[in-house]
Image (tube, rainbow, N blue to C red):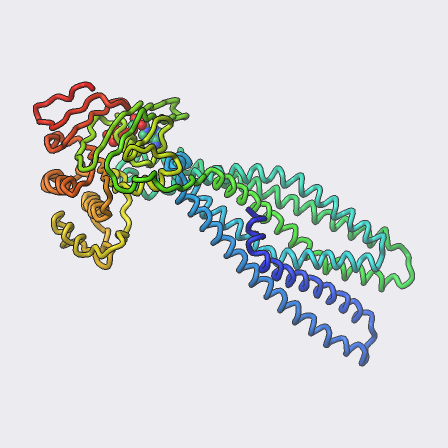
Amino acid sequence: MFSYLLQKSRHLFIAAACFSVLAGLANVSLISQINHAINTPWGPSFLALAWPFAGTAVLILLLQSASHILFERLGQNAEAHLKHYICSKVMLTDYRRLETLGGPRIQSALTEHCEKVKRFFVVMPQAMVNAMTVLGCLAYLSWLSWQVFLLAVLVIGLGMLGYHLVHLRAIRHINLAAQAQDGLHGMFRALVDGAKELRLNRARAGHFEQKQLHPAIEVVRRERIFGMSIFYLSTFWGSFLIFGFIGLVLFALIGDVPDRGKVVTGFALVFVYMMTPLEALLIVLPEFNLAKVSSRHIDEISGELQAAEEQALPVGGQVFTSLALRQVCHRYYNEAAGDMFAMGPINLQLNAGELVYLVGGNGSGKTTLAKLLTGLYRAESGEIILNGHAVNADQLGAYRQLFGAVFSDFHLFDTLLTGQDVDAAGNALLVRLQLQHKVTVKEGAFTTQALSQGQRKRLALVATYLEDRPIYVFDEWAADQDPTFKDVFYRELLPELKARGKTVLVITHDDRYFDLADRVIHLEQGQIVGEKRAYRAEDQLSLV
Ligand SMILES: Nc1ncnc2c1ncn2[C@@H]1O[C@H](COP(=O)(O)OP(=O)(O)OP(=O)(O)O)[C@@H](O)[C@H]1O
């Protein structure tokens, strides 16, 4: 991911890196000027050194500011780019895969991991300036004494080897913390979404807080402390080597040379000047490693978010006449519980203008069948036949556009994207569903969503109704509506849709209205066990 991001903004990166490198070189030039000034006697030639000094200092400030601004820009660009990239992958990913992957992992990729990758760019300019300063100081050292220079290279080599070994260990802890953090995102959601349940049940709240939330926070805390402590211990190792190096040079290597004072001052100046950037460099290294870990997590998650190919529907697929599931099968496997739910083989045909009810006990597979029918799930085996033509996996995206649906866990968007002026039609529907005093449709959007769950479900119905698709699926829409709205739904809206030639599949337990359906299909344990045409209340569903 890093190389891709760098590649994408390479011009900006090169410019920012050049500013950083120049700032580092200017830093080194400043130290040689200081050393020169220390060894120049007072007089006009000494005073003449002030102007280049001032010029170099101003140049350093300008270069550093420019590189900071450019790297900040790079960081923000990288974060925004990653968010766009992950979001569009999520949008295109197979629905079932998304269900399996789970919201918390995507959430943490979009927040924490993107932020850490951004930090890479934010800390980069200072790291580059520091690295250049250290390299420049080393070059200056080599000019002062090649023996000292070789010793410095040896020390830095040893330091880097130690760092590498230690960081491998630290990253293991940081990874564990990242995994626990993914779980925490789910818990944070439960903290708000489950606020009612938690307040109504102290035992549950206690269990959730003590056995789940706190332990997970604790794991993140502990593993991050371990990981980061190891990182900082490696900084200690680096500083230890530097002190050892300075001691060796000052007390063992220089010896009794002529002009000893001048030589020692020169070395001391370089050491003092080099120490701060070297330490800053050591401290910043963990951030690079954290960014690397996060980038790997983003790679992993986006690898799992596989977009399907998009192809148009088969010829003649656009004008809907009939739809059939042939030998369609699907399985859920719950690894944790060692449990499996198998649906199918299902054979089912829906024709244009048909009103079909799908009934069955809880957990019999009605919603799963609706998800297979609408193309949200890919069948493990079997076929979907649209207007007599098989729909292949790559055509599912186009196929899904035939449907308007309200599932029981619907999400209500503010805007009604129907491509035409729907305010009048929307407001007329709101009147029929007695919501006109609460909400209106204005410029293609609902004026509010601050309504009861049943009222919001009526809004979802309005939004879907206005989409004007050939096939509608309603998953227990009426379950939480009062009798008046059940009547409006079953006796007015559904027959109206049918009269407009729409095909409607209604998942329901409302047996009072079964007689209004053209067909009632009975599902149990993932199998169609009965079907009745022109159903009457006294009818029993017969086995197929
Ligand atoms: N996302 C999922 N992951 C794993 N298993 C699932 C998932 N969704 C449903 N199941 C399993 O599939 C079975 C059928 O579920 P489904 O929601 O299709 O039933 P349903 O007939 O719509 O039930 P209800 O009337 O309660 O809404 C359930 O028994 C459940 O074990």
